[in-house]
Length: 323
Image (cartoon, helix red, strand yellow):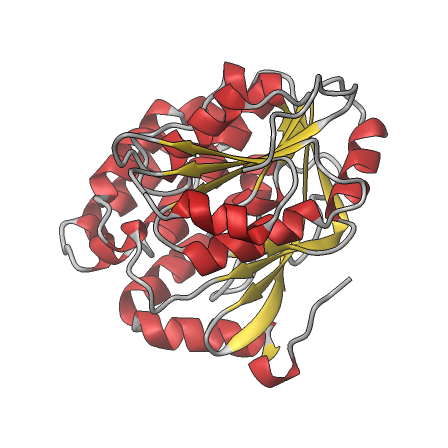
């Protein structure tokens, strides 16, 4: 393991990578972080539960300024990120999932954007190259429009099979104090980054989306995910509790497209009237939201994914690293 680094310089970046039993993938993520220019001050790998072999794996990689935190029990990615933030010493924290990788120049672009931000507490994201088993495409499809509520940019769909706004965890860079003041909600089975982002924006932070690819999201949809088993009722309860973070249109779109698309919702017929009722009772759905809701229920999930990939992407055979 690398020796303890000295005091962090002004503007230092701590990278936090939660991981669980995916040694080859986390090494790829670590290398993509340590090869950045400027280099991060430190890379903190948080093992989500005991992993006796991980320390040796990181040692063999000969990474610089990389330290390992091994949690005694499995707590989930959100809690692991929170633990990494607590241990970080940099002024900035950049998040990276163990199965993703950063593209060259990611940190440099984002630090420049943070320096030029219009507020003292900037959150910086960027575009991500999404690579599924079938295709490669870029998200977000567009930047937030001037004056557009971020909650609507993230939730309202203008295409039946895809959204336009998007913030992925591995693109997030923000002052460490923001992550300390507003930790990730460990109770959520999904949308943890959306919940965190909207909470910090509500408290006065501002969002800057770098108009360039900064990361690769390896979206292996064949892998079991917590989102496949999460209870849709938990997400409805969360939406109600966070109601003030959404415009009425965004609230309805959240329920009728994002929550409705969860497999646990589609396999529970009680979800159909419940989500529709909640959208009308506390939101303001538009005709497109209702049409999206119907296709979520009527079109099989695998077919929806293929249609999305056909509309947004290109063949994986043409996919290369973007700069």
